[in-house]
Image (cartoon, rainbow, N blue to C red):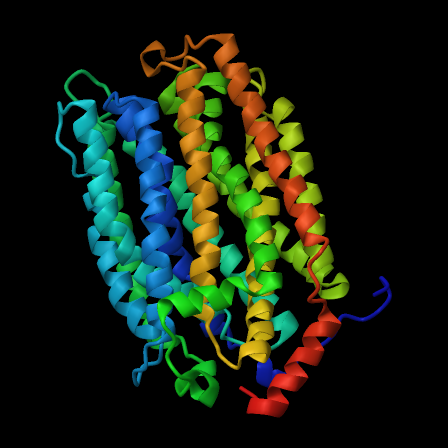
Length: 477
């Protein structure tokens, strides 16, 4: 499509009302805080404050993600096969969302003076309880995003609202480290009591999660559940559902680029924090956490521009070319991180964080919209709507990549000689290695993802043909 070609319009019947777009975006508070907040502050709490080996913390976080390997597919399949007067997704959003908010503080209700192994098993066992609760909410939430509209471009718009609201939730993650070091949580020696700060912070966020779950339940609607395809389709065993899902070729390509991208994303979340604290701020945790808060604000602002910029590009060029442009932009930002994290000019890291969020927000917006197209392709092939199973497999791939990245980050810290007891006196070799891995791993992942994306076949014209065939077979939704 040329630059002078007008952007295509959306049929009014396919548009999602604004209140539903916003209510759907509120689910990102659960997704960010219930899944990724733990990875953001686990190292400050368990490694920096409680003195647990970074290798043990990394291994515990790996276990945390591996529990998703069981709970996500089960909850996605369960949601697909649920039939109630409230739909397939909304009951899980209500019950799972409230329980996730109530249980969030429990992840940090650890005792003091324990041995490293005791803290390790505490992290593993609390994750084993919490992750299935989060999966019950998140699989229904993610699945509903693919059901809100049948329109190729409106799907991207729904995901753009989700992406912008997600950045508000992410500010809560960036502010977490600073909150845990507030003076009100200092002990008798004046040292910040990071553990108590984390407990209080998670209690506050858990309350917000409960409110969001209630709003979502009462505002959202399930368009596809009104259609005979979803309401009356036969139930499928978990094994058969997973096999049929993984047999979808376009979906396997999406899994590949998600995995490659997610590993780099995880390294950013872990090593980026250590770069700010120990490289830019030379071990000053309080100052470093303040910078992290400002970086979170920058991420929110830049993300809005990222979503709007790439949504415009995608509406004219299509989703595949739009996502390819996201990959190129993000790779350039990680390359520039070598110069943007600079102790002499600490404010530059705000731009680094903002530019990373600029690309990340667009990636997840387009990735979610593409997955909705793939589910339509699968419905044409199989005659079934299986959003939950697709989302479970897709999310599991992301979490596997994040787990590998988080685990690798912990081992990198251990192997490079990082020692929390040294504070700002880390060796230059340690800091240089962290910086190289921070920049290099995401670029490699993006290159691999670009190769897979180039083979993706579902263009705008192909999706128009698929929709026409589906509506001729089962009617409109």
